[in-house]
Image (tube, rainbow, N blue to C red):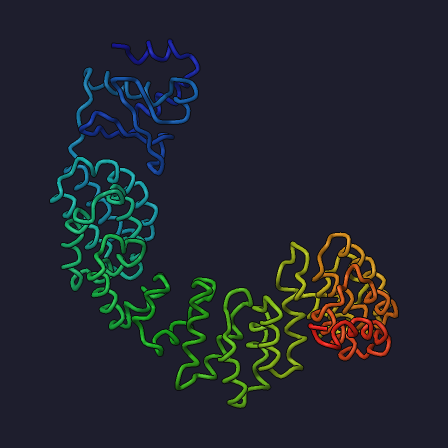
Length: 482
């Protein structure tokens, strides 16, 4: 069997200084023969596994060089122990770790968090050598030592670190382990309640519901647990309790969809107008979503002059012309433009503005100018609305529309052809009457007759296109059988 010095001489790229440091440090030997040791000889936050018989290690250095100081250190430790590595008594070792954890918690609680990480590394790797009864004892001892409101998250993280292999265990196994802890929930209420934080998979659906209802009935527990719950659990708490919670919590610590849910909850009967306005004004635009029916309630209740914050959120959520039409119909119109400008500075525009945004700019913002855009790149829908609301831009838009008209004909897209003729008619472009006389485009059938007559009547260009309409009408005047 190869020895320590022989291994180092055979692998000259392995640091002897590092191997000596590791040789002097702590290690654990599991029943399966795998030795565990700190990767860097100082902290157990990162642990490596070494097979001293096959001279293998799972560290990156070994995988790269086919040799490493961890293997050398284990060979040295074996020589120090008379040629044999004793298997660690997992039960006794875990007992000693728990005693040290309790001493740290009682005498130096400010260092407890720093001690827990190496604790979970040691215990977590050795737990496979513990019986189920010993694992249950470990769980209860952790619950007892860490049973305090300030250590709830710490207890949750510690359990997840120690019992990480349970993520792959069956529901029956996890239930067996954690059932004893659940039964102790009156004695260790802070620790057991912490199971609702990232550990709910260890609870059955029924046990979780029992626990969360008990938490909701305890004011002190609620204050600690609510900030860390998933939003779908909040319905167990009363509206008043959720409002009290949201008043004092940092909104950055709760999901935006939960803020949206509380806002809507506040407007259920009887509405809590003042609380709603206070929360809306605290909420960043990108966090909360305001519902249009709630803003209508505010307006109808006489809060129209105080709901700019709610309008800001409503406008921020516009994603189509349909949204715009709904919003503009329910708010004081003078509040729209300030909200629209705030939206444009709050939202990061990494892509071209959507058609609906450009249209709204022209409809609402008098400072919006056609010069901001490449007119030829604008869609027919956008050009159509611009020429309607900004007749001073009609000449430029009609010039582009003529090109679009010819391109639509070439591409054989009759819908776009008709759309472009409509824009030209709106822009009072004389060429519209010439285009409607094009028999290659308009087939002089009944559909085209109705369409073009509608253009002429709606856009007051009927006189210009009347001669062509008359030609189109003649084949249909006497009826289909003549």
